[in-house]
Image (tube, rainbow, N blue to C red; front, side, top):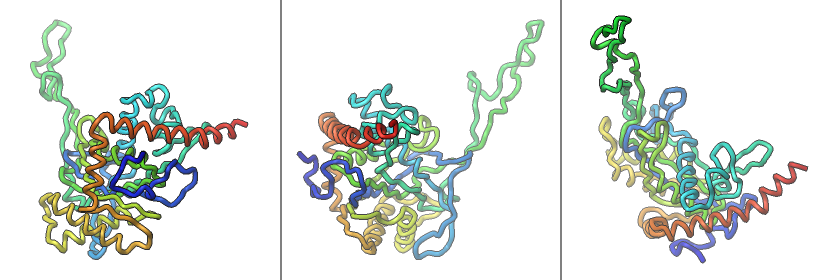
Length: 341
């Protein structure tokens, strides 16, 4: 029995196919920073020098959110749910250590275990770029590590005669500077699921909606909200994150809603993002069914009604788990057995 009534069943496979079958579901996501996250490599924020827009040929530096910074937190949220509702245990499937190879996370997001087996990810995520320039999107903070008394100075050490060597002692040198991304920085990102079943589609959809932290130090900062503006079903891949970002920049420039150095208004960004993706889809040479703007509301409301209660989320996870185990028994176990001969 299908979960969704707002979509045509022909958009999904009945079972996970072994070979690519030319069905794609593209989640149109605007990632909005809500604290001071860190997307960095080697202690520096990731950035790229690119053209400002499709039409605007000026060159600017943009913050970059690499694909692993996006996909890993989302799949970890899914794994957390699988453990909560007892579809897998931490002992049988440990991320990047020992994969069980037969649950929704392993089959949808992929794994590689040397000679034991591997599965290519069916979720495609590319680097996302900030709409605004690097200089407007980051801030440098001075960080410190105080002592337990709440100050930056430790009490003096005792001498051999029992007296303190000074009341205050030495001031700590544990001070550092770190660039952080500012709140209300927007990263347009297209998450693509290849050859979806309905359960896999809902599993990935739910992971995107639930994920709240991205980047380094996710227990202390990194709050990011995913604002979905639509889903595109197609028989091929659609435009890139960079081109969509550049088209949004052009649209906002035309609307005079780029407010440098002030943060962008979220309503302006969402409106420009919808217009930009609709224009870009009109230029595509593929067959596609778009759920954008008003057409998207019934779908996302139906998904939320399914995933915001225990019965609904368990039924989705149960179906996704059944499909994953059927796929693994047909394909992954055979591949593993063949390698051992």
